[in-house]
Image (cartoon, rainbow, N blue to C red):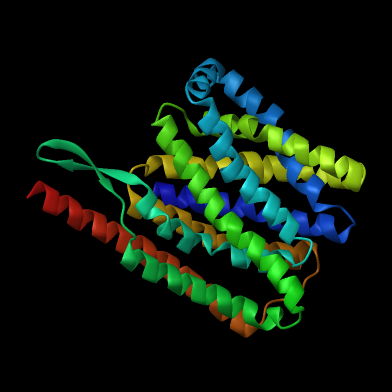
Length: 322
């Protein structure tokens, strides 16, 4: 239950991303600065935490072993995740992006065959290629149905162009984030804690953010004071707190594809928090009865997903013991 709880807490803080990014767009800020400033501002906060825990040197040693892999998968997990999300905020409200982002529940399950998981046998630990968790995926589709119900009425108010530009980048991000996260877990092999891993990936992704900032400087100019302050808020709430909570949860279930998918499914809560945040802070309309029905289905699907994953794991352990 603890990984699930941490996942829900992460979803709460991740929701600030969708709310504040939309707020920045509505106030005239550009998505380039919303994306790059978050990760640039994350560095000093994470450095202080890791240095205070006396874990900076071990992190640098691990990074040095496979520096190329760190640059690649940090670019995928952070760059191809957050830049598309910020780009989408220019064309769609936060609730629509948060809702579309829940496709990551399915994306994470579909990525299972790309990874191996460790199981205990009578002859000792054995690595086997992951399989798509069909039952878990079915539960994920229930969550997705709830998301569709939540968005169906509001989506009718936007043009096809805005919907596509607000949806396609988020789908790209939904595959990039779990792919980069899982690849880095395989590289770290439990040698780094969540703070170290987030700092390492942030440092390795900095070349991309600096290049994006340089592009923004010559195309849209410097960011406003308001956007800078809001970017710092996103960096702390989403970039530091939420990311560390989520990585801590995934680290707890590292090597178990079913439980990992269950933790990733908790991110469906983001849409509920995003809706509440937009109603309170951006004066968005209160969701309709159909949208509330969708929220209930999301909760039901999330509980069912966790139950099926746990039941399958217990059965698998019993079979191995026999």
